[in-house]
Amino acid sequence: MVPGQTQFTRMRRGPSSTAVDPSDAATFTPERLSAGPVRTVAGFEDISKLPALIAGLRKRGWTEREPDLVLGENWLRVWGRVWGG
Image 1 (spheres, one colour):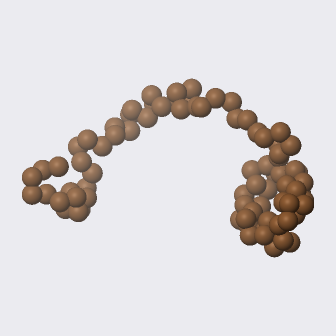
Image 2 (spheres, rainbow, N blue to C red):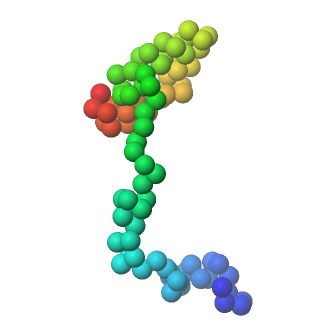
Image 3 (spheres, one colour):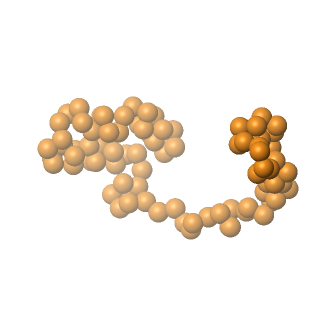
């Protein structure tokens, strides 16, 4: 940062000359970014296994409402879209 220049004034003037060059994005290929193959937990391979998870939580003393609070409607919506449930 330039002496006397605050972070705020630097942001107001726009991006710095050290910003990432968009042409560098080509070097970030999936092979370089990947952490390896996607793995699932045995017994929870897709959304169809969700009822077993909820039943397991209830067996362990969770109330009827608690799994809903943890999983939430949003999670169910996202999982349904991702896994086609």
